[in-house]
Image (cartoon, rainbow, N blue to C red; front, side, top):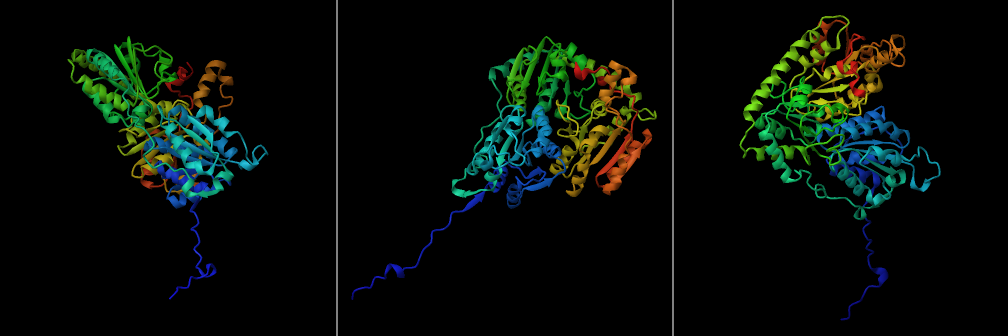
Length: 572
């Protein structure tokens, strides 16, 4: 029997499955998740809201602040605390310009953060769109990578590019501008370029030229009076253990600055702080690790040793501003570990000399500690800044992260406050930016919720970004804010008095008396004013017991200046 073939019109219709689409904002979120980013810091704007929608779907936390500078500082702080790339997302125009200071600070501090900025639609290019500016042109001098994303399909690819550059050599910030229509558009997911997590970067754990490792090992085992400065890159590379073993195995006196502070605990026999000038003047070998020869080292002039070795993540930094004997470029932790291993197989000709050298420096260090002890324990009223720094040092525990944000008051603290371990010290870095403390404190508490965060502000620096304490309250990120209140921008005032006399010394730097503890009352958190030195410790303990954000307003002697301020060393 013949079979009847159904007519075409009788066949069931099979519709092709619609391609899966994804928006630009959701691509941003997926790419950030690829980078291990679990939080963005932001202030809202119409150009960027699709990123928020994507972050919700990807489980990325959104912390919205009250000023974009704080968002950028928080992203910088996140990077420092985690070793991952931090991320801030801001709108176009003033949103991006407000974030510039935070990006510039990260640039000088070698912190790997990504700023994503909005832009008016490509379809409105050169038409005068809302908040349209040449953001990329502004950002190029203060980033390692800055560009505009041209198409939705390539958003994730550009974020991967930015991340690679942020971690290339010495770390630093990157900037991506994403126009509004590029973010809002939806594209076929199959056409979107999404790099596979962990599969598009090379190792950065280079030790440089192995022959130079051997040279440095040979130099050090023959040295009788070496010293080493451990800078912030020791922490950046998470090379703390390697640095400690290097110092201990070779018996080298160690000084620390920036995030390198805490590499050795305060009571370590090779941890020195007050005798750096002596060591740099008398050492036969000085090794500078992860710190440029910038103003902090007198552009290299403060190091007077006949043999100077520099170890850094950046080739451009090594030998800059002064001649050196040997330069090594790579991961500073890996280099120190390799040198320690190479030295272990050599005859240690300088061992006896180094033992005597350590004893000599220790005697000088103890003498310096004793000489300044009366100022640290001073009962003078108004309170001397050294007393405040001393009380903070006594207050901090092995669980405390210290944040310094200010001029003269933090200069005092830098000579006194000793972090009890690695990764427990945060300061602006060489840009000397005021206002970092609020963002840093939030980032520190967010990334280490089990740790106590203690931030020391000058009254000038706190006023710049302090209203974002309310953001910390909203997101349950409590920290203790200590305000060293001397009613002036004292680091500048000191120089003005020296140059122009007392009658013109207060111009442009007199801040007036502000009862910051009343700000705490307004926010419903713990606040207290301290006017007597004996009350500092009890007030800090009450703040700790409160368990909330807290503001301790400590009134300081306005006519006490840090030695570095009096000598105006920051300008020399």
